Amino acid sequence: MFYHLLYPLHEFFSGFNVFRYISFRAAGASVTAFLLSIVLGPAIIRLLKQAKITQTKAQETRLGLHPAHAAKAGTPTMGGLFMVIALTISVLLWARLDNSYVWMALLATLSLGVLGFIDDWLKWTRQNEKGLQARVKFIGQIVVGLGIGYFLWRDPDIGFLTLPFFKNFILPMGLFYIPFAALVVTGSSNAVNLTDGLDGLAAGCLAMVAGTYGIMSYLVGHIQLSDYLNVIYVARAAELTVFCSALVGTALGFLWYNCHPAHVFMGDTGALALGGAVGVVAVLIQKEILLLLVAGIFVIEAGSVILQVGSYKLRKKKLFLVSPLHQHLLYKKWEEPQVTVRLWIVGFLLAVLGLMTLKLQ
Image (tube, one colour):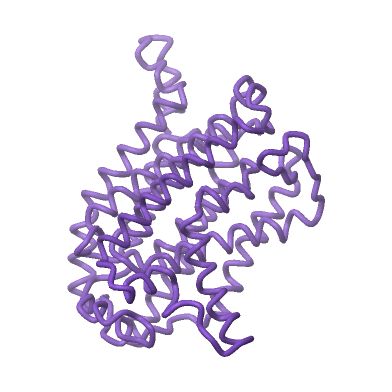
């Protein structure tokens, strides 16, 4: 909005020319999202407490969770509400609203946020941990992913599979790109949801992944830089830098209230929405495979659940004391802040490695 309202005024005052630059608007989006989260947080947390939309003892002591989680009962959940609000307002203020990629990322985020909100609402009204049936939630995610895939399949700039380290590998996927995009978005959304089990863990990792994909969006959307790095140029991708920067600010603003001991949890409202947002950006800039590295913590957390279930069904034996991985580490006598910070460190290193691969094409 600022671009469309204020940039044209540069003809009268040159200072308004700054709204032309993506870097300036990205910084503004990040700061705005952070401040909105800080401002909205206390009010929404207070409303959630008054409405008693909190974690129940059943949710925190269900089979497999570390006993220390029982102390979290009574903490407000559904804090993803102010995350989604802050992200949406920030993007609408700072991004170019004539960019279809921005709208696709934002609408997908809101759609998954609504799905997560319904799940959280049902958990609260039923006072148990089940919420939406897993099948219904999964179908909802798939529908959103297929919609995105269809939109991108019709886009001539999208629909290619590239691999890190293989500069000449460009595989047109045609119609198969639709289910592939749905797989990426659904997987990313669920992976963040599974990681959201310790104070600050998911939010901190989200900030790192979003920041990394913000840098990638700028590079992929810059014709000279993409040519220099020998990566596919996607004409409208650079504007996603603003979206990703807003996502960073949102995650950091939420972390302000979610760091140990947490005053609020994001719930499925935030986890499904923002996890899906990362997947959508990865698809839009044609860096889907890199998501496995950059979002490595989310992948490891989701992978630990898949391996645990598979091992138990096939061998009747567990690979971990309990899954996801962060719960296993708690049972290994790691303190919760230790688990969170150490996984942050690993996540940061994986993000740096992801950026390094752009030079190693």
